[in-house]
Structure formats: structure tokens, C-alpha cells
Image 1 (tube, rainbow, N blue to C red):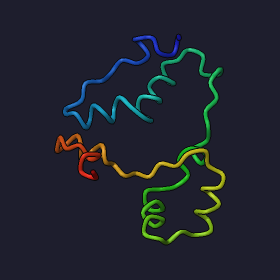
Image 2: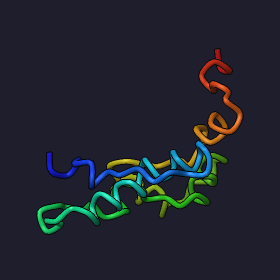
Image 3: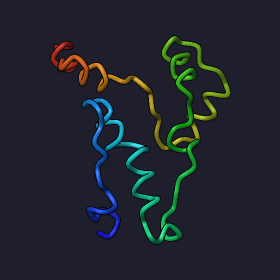
Image 4: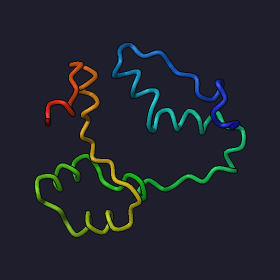
Length: 103
């Protein structure tokens, strides 16, 4: 309850919708909440290799069919993987619904 108090989740106003999304979700908002939390010693942070083990370049290599043994090891240890698709960016900029385009 304390973590999500208004003063801990204040939303910075962006210049456009894409900036607003970036600043109010994911690692930016998580970092702001963590930094504002008075008892960070009570919070367990997962190391990045468990939740975002691959770089953008490695993801692209995997999608292109060029997975290395090192990437396989990283994926085996991870709880989650970020694929950097960025589909939300194109939806935000164009106003298109990507899901409708695949039907």
C-alpha cells in the first residue's frame, strides 16, 4: 500500500504520448517508485540477467535465426525476456491497432 501512494507514483508530463508511456511504465516508473520508497532495504531487486538477459542486438540475432550458445545459457537462467519489438511505439505514433492488422 505504501509503495503506490500518490507521492510515489507521480506521473511526469511528457511532450507526446510515446514519451508519456515511456515515463509512466516499465523501468522508468519502477526506478522512480523504488527511489522514492523510504524502506528500500525491504525490497528485493532481481538482477537484470534474470529479467532482461539479452541486448537488443542479441534479440535481433535470435529473431534472425543466429542464436549462440552464450545466448542459450542466458535464456535458460532467465525468468523473463524482453524482445524489444516496440509495437506500442508504432501504435502510439500512428494510432493504428497492430492486433487488427493481423486479422
